[in-house]
Image: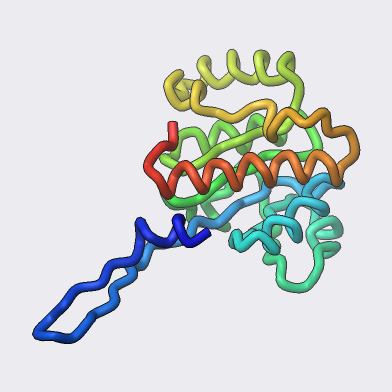
Length: 183
């Protein structure tokens, strides 16, 4: 673990005194769109892994069921910019309750420059969504950077296992981004 810090820590000899400098960088927020079974497992897990987490859901009754310390936002999937502001350091994890919600969120977040965008779902669902996104004018280059199906291939089945696979992919992306190896 010390190796991870060596790229970020510097010391200088200034008139015989050592000066320690650690560059400050903004840690991105993981925005989880959808408050279903996988989100309920994923949010506390990645919070424990030192990610800032915000769960965004249309249905208030689902958004209220997250543990203390997990920020939730209730808003329409068709108008996320009215409720949140995402930056180039942020992550979008899309796992709404259906194809329409996934598309509505994807169409908005793919127009932004984010560090990471991933969507849960089958390859067939994603292929159909891809065609709709192209028709809506979303740049194909941005669509090609989409992580889907989301998560590392560990043959996950249960919501908790899927959450672990997604968390692993987020950890990998964060580590590669720190080293400048992000795709």
